[in-house]
Amino acid sequence: MKWTKDSWKKFEAKQMPAYADQNKLDSVINELSSMPPLIFAGETRSLKSQIHQVQKGESFYLQGGDCAESFQELNPNTIRDNFKLLLQMSVVLTFATNKPVVKLGRMGGQFAKPRSSDFEEKNGQKLPSYRGDIINSFEFNESSREPDPKRMIRAYNHSASTLNLLRAFAQGGFASLTQLNKWNLDFADNFDTTKKFKELSEKIADSIKFMNACGVNEKNTRELRETDFYTSHEALLLPYEQAFTRIDSTTGEWYNVNSHFLWVGDRTRDPDGAHIHYLSGIKNPLGLKVGPSTTVDDLKRNIEILNPENEGGRLTLIIRMGAEKINANFPNLLKEINKLGVNLTWICDPMHGNTSTSKSGYKTRATENIFKEIQSFFEIHKSEGTVAGGVHLELTGLNVTECVGGPDDIKDENLGDRYHTFCDPRLNVNQSLELSFLLADLLSNGEMN
Picture 1: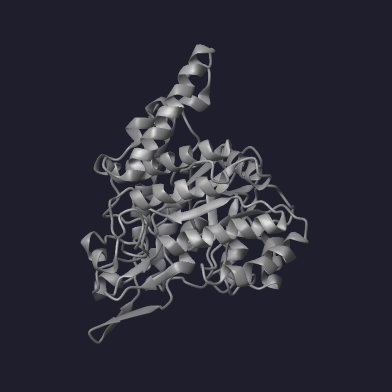
Picture 2: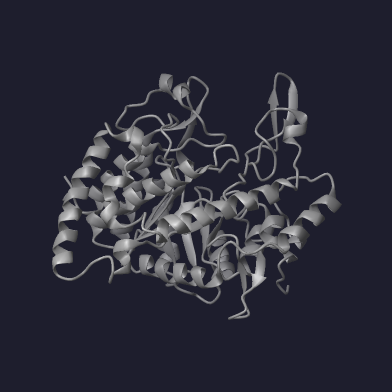
């Protein structure tokens, strides 16, 4: 079948909302189709090139952000603090590996979420599940849970504001390595991980002074004063993605211009489904979630569909098995796919396979299991002689209590203190920084201790 930006409609589209008014939906898609792009095709080509360096073991991949962005929590401080946290983590990892870190935020478009059930029931009332602010609202009432196409326009406006601020932070001096100590979050001053980061900052500051004495400084070296930062989200709501699928005037090829990097989730990765078909036609770098139920044959088919030209940096496989399943499921999968000899980047999502429900009823994740899966992922790659590229995390710059464990030893009874997520639990600042130091220690063979 010839691919067009709306040919996905001829395939089964899972996890899609049922809009009551088709005319209203069409009107919104037409309006969005005329909106300015959020990103440019040339930026996605730069990202693809950088991910190819990850594939070759020359860079490290760090992707992180909210489970799902919310209209309510989206403000300049939240965007800044998430950006700060990712900068801090990237510095720790760069120092440990002596490699550049490719930074992607789950930001500027991560508004839709797949759900295990189409409906949610409370006190005998059954309503459509909350699927993210781009589709419906978290409040449990009939009008809030009705999918509203106009929420896509609000999501676009929020994404545009987010991208604008992120560009300013990345390129306007905020990300300068001379500003390391200013990246610490105000509420985190007494965290042990923050103190550890300050010690690292002092070492880097001394190195920068030496470089300045040698004539290498912010004025003549871009890498010291600014950074590349890319956005990403799950390509779940296909009418929205369609509206931003446009032809690049310089190459004549189709790109999605609302995010640099798009991925397909474990629930929508059917090789014969609408989501895989849609992604096959755009030239952005892509991600594919690989869960414990993934078969070798299905994965091979998806690789053929999503990277038919075998481009380096085009396709990233995001492994999300769970700490208890990765050692049983991943080694054979890696071995069989590695036999293909194709260009692929492998990273670990240690979040989605390690979700549980606490005794108090909160959905949570144990930091112990998160790191255990990362450790297994890197060990399996080492045993196969392949490259473990990086990590994909759900985290926040807010001081939340959503995941148990970590430096503060958050327990089940503490979850209700600051549990703010509308979807999945996120690592907080202290837990995220601790994870980056543990990961750095793993990558540097214990030299960070």
